[in-house]
Image (cartoon, rainbow, N blue to C red; front, side, top):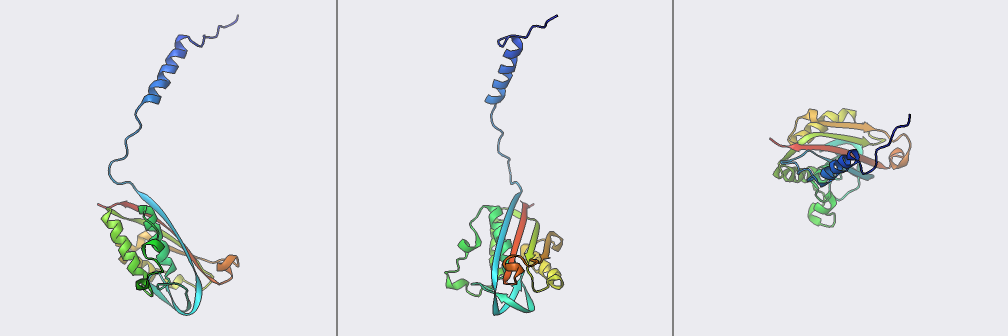
Length: 194
């Protein structure tokens, strides 16, 4: 016994086509009302500059070579600034505070972070969490992590538990592994502030 195949124009085919047409002509979903969570990524790197003090996360690291830069060269804070600016859809730190402007020479990077946090708050966002990886062959950073987290949390206006800083070594690879400088990656989650 052979079964008949339904014709392309049969009832079943017509129903499927009509259903597809209704779905295709349906209105697109409405944009979400209110503020949605936003994610940002910041990356910065600086070469060592003997004779300068090393500042990371607003904390002076004693006995270590500093970094080359127009401001205090706090590479960790710079990466955080860029992460927040990226999450907000704003231009990066170098555009906001250009190195060509003499007024920013030697300025503490926490000044820049405070300004960016004001911009974040004016857009009704707050830090959900901040995750930072510091790539450095030297110095050893573990003893300085708690003070860095405390300083950054105070400036950002969050709990230190929302700030993670993880030091990693270059294992001999690249400019970090050769001990020529420090690179930092920062990821931030912004949430609507209450």
